[in-house]
Amino acid sequence: MPHRVRLPRLSRSDVEELVKAHGCLVAADRALREGGWKGAPAMIELVGIVDALIARLYNKAEVSTIRQSGAPAAETAPGAPLEQHPTDEAGQERYGAPAKPEA
Image (cartoon, rainbow, N blue to C red; front, side, top):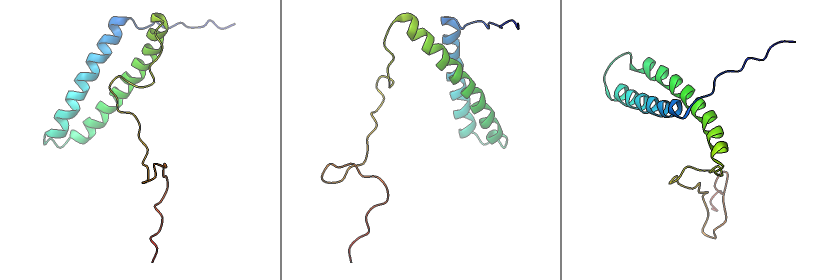
């Protein structure tokens, strides 16, 4: 029977470091976009790949942190705008292509 490998968990300080690293990557992305360096597009792509990895690690750690604290998980971040659907004059939600005008 194969032995199951147990990987180490992230500590709270590890998660805080992930947040700091994300901030550094956002700043690097901004600097690359605002600069005139020819290699910026390739570096922006690489920065995005690393930031996506950090986001996945943070999201996994966030789930276990919420479970440990016993707090209910928020569906949206505090202060995030709520999703709004376009409506017509009668307040009905409208989706799809607009109706053709009558001639």
